[in-house]
Length: 88
Image: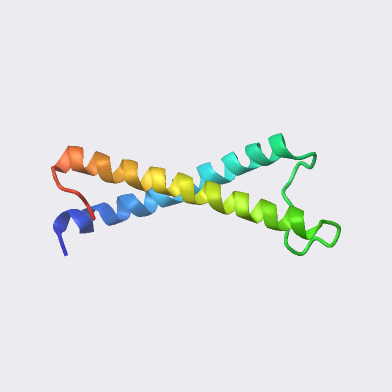
C-alpha cells in the first residue's frame, strides 16, 4: 500500500464525516423548499404516502452521493497538490 494512501486514510474519514453533516443540512433545506412539511417523512410514518416516502429517500440519497463525491474528489485533488501523488 502506498504511503500517500495510508496518510490520506484518516483525512478521508474525517472529510467523510463532515460531508455527511453538510449533506444532511443541504437535504433539510432542499426538502423545506420543495414541501410543506418541516421534516422529511420516515419510512414507517403511516400518515405519509408511498410517493412522499420514496421521493424523500431518493432525493436524500442523491444529495448525499453528490456531496460525498465532491468532497472526496476535492480531498484527492488537494492531496495531489500538496504531495504530488494521487491518494487512490
